[in-house]
Length: 198
Image (tube, rainbow, N blue to C red; front, top):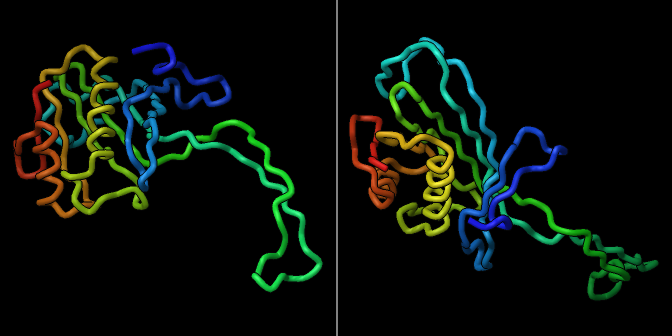
């Protein structure tokens, strides 16, 4: 990964510590580079039921929160208003356009935990926002890029886990989500979990 693909977030945004380029995607027919803002923290394991049986019910785990995004131009338009509405419905015309740089447009959400005692990575959620979703997730190339990019980003920061565990994503019908997870290399492990060996 080159320096332009991976960088630390600036001090102005202290929650997200890392920023990664995870792939190229198409959104609404336009090509974009998909990036991931990533927060990483250690947190206490609370003594309650987890997605899978844990051997250590106290101690710490690593938490990851990611916001996938694309960069889009930030342009400010100056509009000169007409004294009356024109016959074509226009209320004025653009008199100036200023490009101010690039802004982040978030396109999804992702969260995961790593349990060091069990050497298990749990991907709790990884999905695109409604306006970018495709009804059939197994055919959604952008979702596939997001999922594999999130996995890769986590694996690069962790000791190699023995397995990756995930569960249903309730924004999709279960049979469609199961098909998607199969395309990502997961197999059903229990009624609510799917597992993969990295």
